[in-house]
Length: 291
Ligand code: AMP
Image (cartoon, rainbow, N blue to C red; front, side):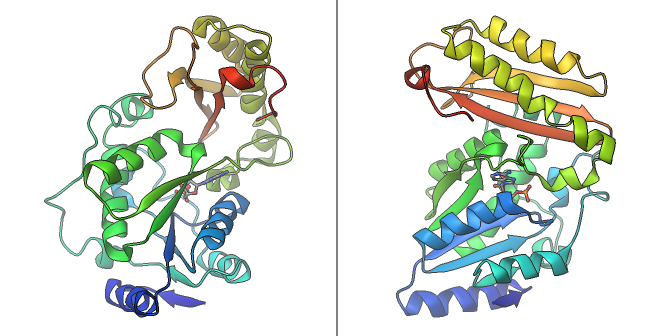
């Protein structure tokens, strides 16, 4: 496995593989890698000849009072995990390499960026879209892999790639969970043992709504109040948002009708913001697999 820190070296690595006729897949990350990231790596390896992972904690997607400094950094562990999962190259640029000059150009995906998490975190998706655009321009992969866990991020990146006629196909990968249902996340490392014990309540609250949905409930307010009620049973969890949206447009739904809907939740536990999602599909309403 190659460990690469400059754009020039990364471009050289990619073009040598392209000349040999190989396809290139790309998994952008902020590091502190875990088995959720590795699901993206495995999918990438299955669909491409060459797999590149990037590790860069991107400052422009953190707000002034957010956890940029506290975000976990474990580069040696990350390189080892990538090596053991058959990654061909890890691109881990420094700040100067990614932002040699203050940016004059940004990517803003209108509407999708300002709703839901974008409302809680103004500027967050501008930072995400801009850094992903930079990374996709550096790597120029055939396919790029993103987790459905960050559902809105996936929607923003898909729309950006479409609107800007980017080469890469954007592929969404289902959320990987811990045994107790908590969505795997780098931020889970920052939960105290007591917080970690109650964290699965967020997922359990969402499962309550899913069970109601499976018995035929379609009213968004009723489904969402099931989530709120269970979350409220755990005093250390503060539900920040809870939305039922159209999976394609992310527009708020009053009822789950014909198309798939997505339940999106963010919750604060101590100093950590947990984020989770799953889709409610009307055609799977009876007997569908548990999320
Ligand atoms: P991050 O390092 O948190 O920016 O995540 C990098 C990529 O991995 C993003 O596309 C995430 O959505 C994805 N990812 C993170 N955690 C999970 C998970 N538990 N399941 C699936 N994908 C994930």
